Length: 378
View 1 (cartoon, helix red, strand yellow):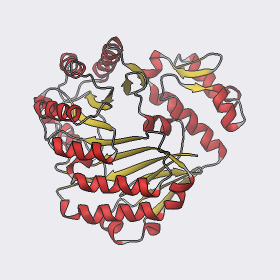
View 2: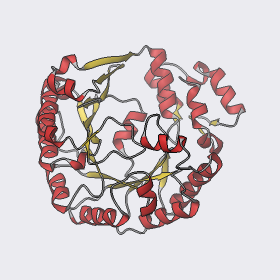
View 3: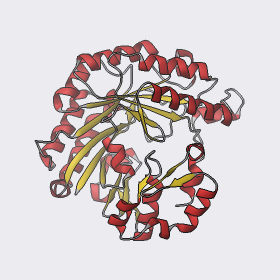
């Protein structure tokens, strides 16, 4: 069976004001010990990696580009050493990079070791907005990073943007979209995420004190549809709630997750999904570094078929093309139209989904209220 790999790098230079991910600013003295632990974890799962076909690898964080590039290279080599990877197929290997944390030499190391996809965290083309959300870079640094990536030979590059940011207007968003789509060559993939306010973050505290104000829901919705229309007119395919791609450059790693395929996570707080079981590694860095790999894992969920069916619906309805009824039948031996007749009837009446001969998918209204759709399958 196909298997994806996720590697979590929990280090960063400075924690963004909206971030609640498991990350540790300025603890770089631990990075080599940490990477050795990740490599041990990969070796301990060699049998699983050998018995499945690895199709994607994704380095996330934190900020993976903030540690020595040679350590990333070391992990990639270990994956190729331990994993079943068909040489005739070029698997998708992605690393998240932030402007201000890489130079051309670093990017060349990534390219030479087999990484073939970059995801660059721009978030906004406006320096004043970047400052408000605690990003360490300016737009000019993003431009340098992008140009170095092209010079290093990367042909598959995603750029992350955000909407609903403090004091962000449609004009600000348009400026960012125009800047990104004017790059030459154009990015192959653009992600547009809504800002989510997480409890306990620096940004949440400032909002609660009235120090920072966000666009209201209607404004954020207008920004989303503006971005959607803008990018589609520029030739990008809107294939998932927050993701747009040139044809053939959709993120394989994310698509596999949304299609409920197996993946294994290595590193602090990394999650895995194997044979219907979800488990996660400890979120405590010292515990991760000091204990044996078997003792740092916690089973989060053992799914029954009913659980898998509901989750398949929830994940599949993230995709703009929705769920294939025939594929559902092949996977589970049941018809989703009958199995979820009550939920689907309700959602169709509310004009949140539409059903045709082989597809169940979100309507335009459903894009705005996707959370209400997903709640039906939780």
